[in-house]
Length: 104
Image (cartoon, rainbow, N blue to C red; front, side, top):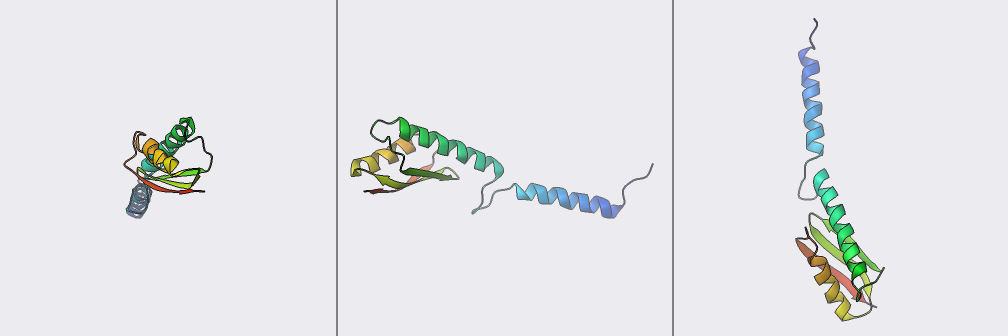
């Protein structure tokens, strides 16, 4: 039985390490799991905003990075700005909310 040469084994080990490192998180980049978690949080926040009678607004954009939700866009009143922040903050998995909504 023929075995792989040490060079081939070393290249395979390096390849596996590169793949694993590519899935890891850094301060400016999410891991694959974090990306999926943030996508779920974004969907839940959007749903919560649309289900709130005071906020049925399609002009609110929601982005999530490592559990931090950023709200941007336009609402009709200052009360809606505050309400959107409260609604987003109540969603499970949200660590903080950056509320950049503007009153039109």
